[in-house]
Image (cartoon, one colour):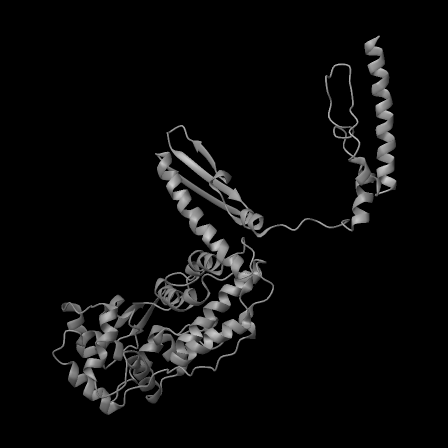
Length: 421
């Protein structure tokens, strides 16, 4: 009997709850009055129950109406700066650890396009390497956030490193790459290395190039050329939309091409060479037009009256090439010495020792090549023949592809190159 009475009381109380809920949705002023009632809900198995409505969430319709009256509808709680920072930080818990069959511990982080792996035979060592990267990466992200950039922004230095060492290096010769690498490390990395790739604007590039141009105009051109290659590669890969270097202007630097020695300077040069260990090297360059990187490859054939050089001016995709030219009248007196003496020396010494022989002039080693070309033209040798002798590409496709001078013809032309000082 008691249970029956309790069940009826419980049903009546539930009906009362519905009425109160309806009144709350329609009339906000009942909210204050509701707190005065402490109606208990009884269930057959409960000794006591929480206040009416506490165990039943309000309907969405009721909640929405209450927010509309308070002016809170469509308003999201503001995310605190602390929570934003927490999202940007990479934690060690984001990494996965596994132990390989060989006992090697491996820690991986793969999120947001980042793929990093650290491995060691001891877990402590692998974890140490991982934490070191996490520290530097989080520091970098904080710096980017302070500058107003996304924490996962692609950094110029990372992209440029990949371009220089995996792309550009394959396109040029080792010596050329060395010069590119020097320009990159000394002028590009310090100014652009830590910046986001898509955050570099033309105005900033212009300011950097202007400051470089004031001190070293020629270097400024090299910096611009390499920057243009990097940003063009970025555009082609879809990393950025516009190459900022295209909007940059710097005054064109007039590069010095070199000057031929006069006949009096040539006579003075030959006199200064006498008795020097490097004499034959310079004689060979003066009377063949060979480059500094080519002189040590010379092979003489006395019977055919020729000297053969390995071409030192080739693109990275070109196969090894050799050029055979006549032994010119001015070179003949030295041939036996070339065959009997140890005359070869390093290319660095070839270029650096030249100024010691002619200290009163501004000539460089390359001017010996200019001198040979100038003397050949002065003696009436055809320009295309001189180009073949010096290893230059001929002017047009007809000359470059279809012209092949016979050795007999070149020997006759070589006899013209006999002048007095």
